[in-house]
Amino acid sequence: MNLVAAKCPNCGAGLELDGKFEKALCQYCGSNIYVKEAVEKLKVDGIAGLGNLLKRAEQFSEDGKIDKAVEYYDKVLDLDAENYKAWWGKAYASFRSASFELEYRGETADYHIELRQANTFLDKAIKYGPKEETDEYQKTAERMMQEARETAERMKKGETEAAKFLDEEKRKEIEAERKLKKTKIIVLVLITTFVLAATTISGSMSFEMLIQIPIWYFIIIFIIKRKKR
Image 1 (cartoon, rainbow, N blue to C red):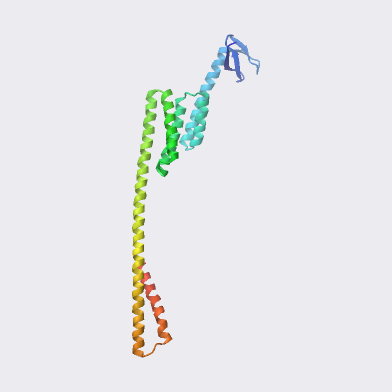
Image 2 (tube, rainbow, N blue to C red):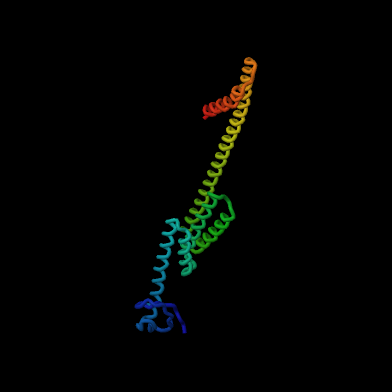
């Protein structure tokens, strides 16, 4: 017995029919069907199903739903393991993930994993697809990774510039604090000198004169800080 996979043209049920016969009976709806027609029906419906799955996968990819796109590409490959468009779809998704990883995190372990997967999937697409299309796939992949490397370099340069700016701001802050401390000492010495001179002239040191030292000190320091702002 030479069993072949088929599909009933009337009820759509999946069948296994003996290819030696011209006609057969559908065990589900009881229809008399042509074996050749039932086999062709399975092929046509299978092609249409693959087309819909690929379209859905591409839609998910365009919407940025990468995991969902890969899920549908895998469904296509379950039906047709040599479907080069599905292999390219998986490669493109992995190249996108690798690009993102490189741009925002650098050459991490995840970046190298995604890149290896992307190249593996691309090799499968090249193996099963027509050269004119797979050449474009390769160019797209190279362009994606080049753009990612350039973006990573720009971001790294920006981070370096930002670090230099922060270092300069910190240096200025430390310098301003040092000058303020020096000013505080000078102010305290001047006020103390003034009070002592007044005491010498009056011949006595009263509590009211003594309390003037911290009062005038804080007043002057407050004015200096306000002016610096």
